[in-house]
Length: 386
Image 1 (cartoon, rainbow, N blue to C red):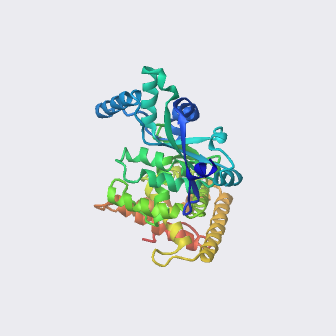
Image 2 (image 1 turned 90 degrees about the horizontal axis):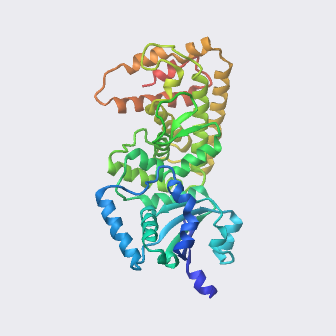
Image 3 (image 1 turned 180 degrees about the vertical axis):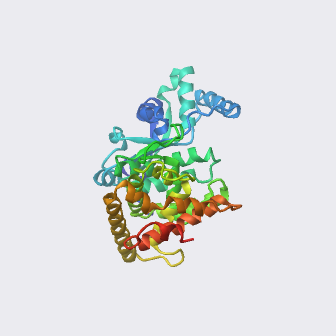
C-alpha cells in the first residue's frame, strides 16, 4: 500500500516541488477549495466562470457529462508548506489531506469546479463521485511561481493586465509581505493614484518582467515577445534569490518615490508634482531595468554569484545613502535638486515612438543615478544622460 501511495508522488527536482495526485470525493474536494473558489481561485485576477455564449454551451455539456459519471482532467491546487512538512510529504509519512487548513490556491480548474457545483445542484447523487486533484506543493514561493508560469504558458490570453495580475499574483503578494505600506491595486480597483504608496499590481509585475529580462521595453501586447519574456522569467523565477533582489529594488524605488512625492505643483510641464514621476510606467521600467543591469551585468556578460552579491551590496548602499540625502532636504532644496523643468523640456521632443523614447530616456537617467548618486549636485546628470 505504501508503494502505491509513493507512486502518486513525483518530485520536480528543478523547481523543488512535489506533484501529488489524489482521488477525492466531490464533497471533500468542494470543501477543500471552497474559500479559494469564493476568492476567485485564491489568486487575484483569476477568471470567474466565463459568461460568453460559447463558454456557457461548453460548460452546459460538461455539467451533463458530470451528471452521467464523466471523469474530468485533474484540478490543480497549489500549496505552500514548511520545509518539515515538505519532507514528510515527500517520504509519504504525511497525507496531503492533513494539511487542508493551509492557505491554498486553485491554480487550474475554475471552470471545471463551476461545472461540478452546477452538476451537484441538478443531481445530489454525485456528491460521493470521485475527482482527480493534483496538489502542487512547495516550501518556496519562487518554486510555486515557476509552476504557475509553466501552467499558464500557451493559453489564450485574457485582457493583458488581468493576465499579469493572475499569473504573477505571488510576486505581488511577496512585495506586499516585504513592504506592508505598499498599497497594491488590482485591475478592478480605482485607477487614480492618490499617494506614493499606491501602485497597480499589473504595473509592478510588468516591472518584474523588465527586471528579469533586463529589457526596458517588454511589449506585452505582442504575443511572441510576451512568450519569450515569459521563458526568460521562468528561468529567473527558478533562481531562489531573484525575487528577493527584485523586492529590494522596488523597496528602494518606493523610498525615492515617497521622498519626492512631498513636492506639489513644482512645474508646469508633464511632471507637475513629485508624485507624477513614478506614476509613469516608462519611469519605473527604466529604473528596474537599469538596476537589473547594474546588479547582474550586461546581457551576454552575466556576472557570477559572487559578483552579483557584491554589485547588490554596492547598489543597495548607494540607494540607502541617496534616500538619506533626499530626507535631509527641505521642500525648496528638493525642488531645486530634482530639476523637473529640465526633465519636462527634454521630454517635449517629438518622437514617432514616444513610449520607446521615454523608456530609453529613463533607463539612461537611472543608469546615471546609480553610478553618480554619491557625487551629483542635482538631477541634471540624469536628465542629460540621453
